[in-house]
Length: 492
Image 1 (cartoon, rainbow, N blue to C red):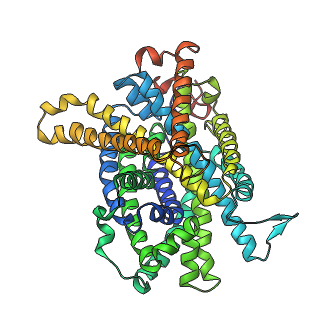
Image 2 (tube, rainbow, N blue to C red):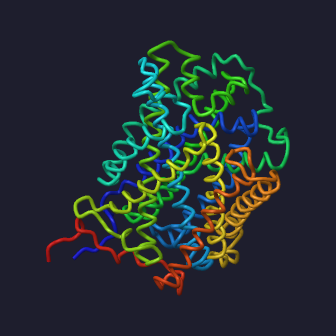
Image 3 (cartoon, rainbow, N blue to C red):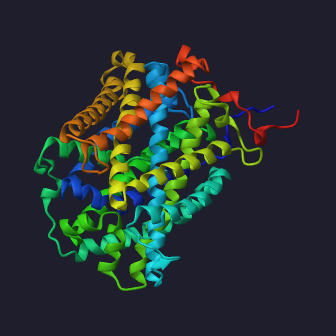
C-alpha cells in the first residue's frame, strides 16, 4: 500500500508558488500603492527595495529548512523542533490567523469591485440599499458570496486551483504591464531619484510602519512550502518560492514608479484601494478603462483562493499533531484535500469580515487589516529565520560561505523583522492616550495583532494541558506519512 501525504504525484508546486505570489502581488499593487503613499509619501519604491533584503534572507532560511525537513506545517514544525513548542505553535497560529484576516478583508475588496461594476451599469441602489463601493458593510456582504464560491473551488484540489489561477494571471499581467508601461511613458509627474531615498522619511515610526507594510507586500511567496508534501522533490518548493519572490520585486518596482509617474501624492492617497481602477480611467476611455478593474477583481479572487490552500494545509499539520482538533485532519474522499478545514476557514474569515463592518469606510478597514497582518508576518518570518540560524549553527565551522548563508543571513534577517515589529508595536502603544476604532489610533492598531497572539497562547495551553499533544513534549511535528489519503491507496 502506498501511503503518501496529499497528492505527491501532482508536482504543481511551481504553479502554486508563482500563481499565489503573483496574484497576491497584483492585489497588493492595486490596493497597496495608495496605502503605502498614505504612510511614507513617495518613498514607496525605496521601502520596497529595502524590505526585499530581509525577505530574501527569510526565503533562504525557508529553503534550507525545507531541504532538511519538508513539511506542510513549515514554520510551525521547524520552529517547534528548534526553538521549542511554544514559539513553534505561535508561529503556526499567527501564520494562519494572518491568512484568515487576509481572506476576510480581500473578500471586501472583491465586493467593492463588483459594486463598481454595478455603478458603471447604472445600478446604484437595490432594495433601498445604496450600492456604495467605499462602504465596508455593503462591500463585505457581496464579497462573502464570492468567497463561498472560491472556497468550493479550493476544495477540489491544487491542480484545478492552479489552472484557474494561471488563466487569471495571464490576463492580470497583460493589463497591469500594459497600463503601467503606458503610465511610465506618458506620466505627468517627473521621475525623481528621491523616490528611492529612505532618508527622506520623516521619523522612525513612519519608517517602521512603512517597512512592515512593504514586507507584507511580498507575503505569498512562501505558499510553495505549504504544498511541499504534494511535490516530487522538496527542492521544488525553494525554486518556486525564489522565482516568485524575484518576480514580485520586479513587478512592485515597475508598478510603484509607474503609479507615481501618473498620479500625484494627493491622488494616490485619495484613491487608496481604488488606485488601479483610477489609473485606468486616467489613461484610457471606456471600455478599455474597465480592464484594470477586471484585473483587480481577478487578482483579489485568486489571492483569496491561493491563501485558503496553505492555511488549510497548515491546520492539517497542526491537527495531526493534536495541537488543533481532529476536524483539521479530515480529508475529502474524492479530492484528497483538507476540505473540512477549508470550509471552517471560510466560516471564520466570514465572521471576521462581518466584525470589520464596525469600520464604515473600506479604506480604513483595509489599512487596519494590512497593518495587523504586517506585524504578524514580521513575527512568524522572524521566528522561522532564527530557527534556521539555530538549527544550522554548526555550519559556521564549515567555511565562510556556509556560515553566512546558513547562519548569518537568516539570523540578521530574522532580527531585523522582529526588531521592526517590536519597535512599531511600542510606537503604537505610545502614540495615543485612548482607544478608538480608527486606523489612526495606536491602541487600536496594537490591539489587533496583540489579541491574535494572546489567543494563540491560550490555544497553545489547551493543546498542551487539555489535548496533551505530543508536540509539546518533543517540539517535533508528526511524520507526514501518518496520514494516508484515499486517492493514494492502491489495491493490495
